[in-house]
Amino acid sequence: MANLAEARAKAAAPTGPFFREFAEQYIEARTATWRSAKHADQWSATLKSYAYPVIGKMTLAEIDTPHALAEIGLTEPGESRPAEF
Image (cartoon, rainbow, N blue to C red; front, side, top):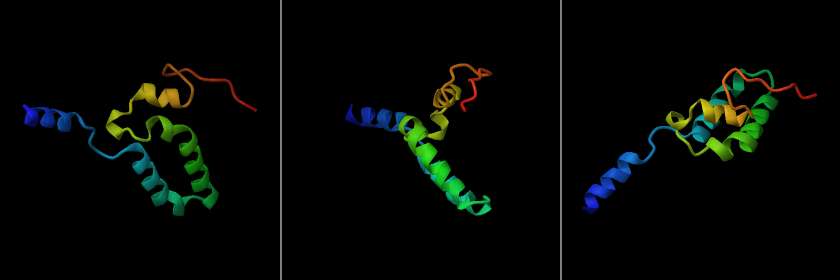
């Protein structure tokens, strides 16, 4: 019985890269192509403040449209929010 429970738990465990790991690797890989090193700092700071607390520990396969929309404060595809000045 314990082996079956362990097997089920392992099968249910998320696999694949986690969002935070993927994002950090992406930023590292792209930094040299950006016009300014500031862009990497801005990306990192924004993700750290907004995305990582919500989806940072999720695998890429677990993230879907509602997660992404919630991150930018929207609830429906096609919805927009007023510009902030």
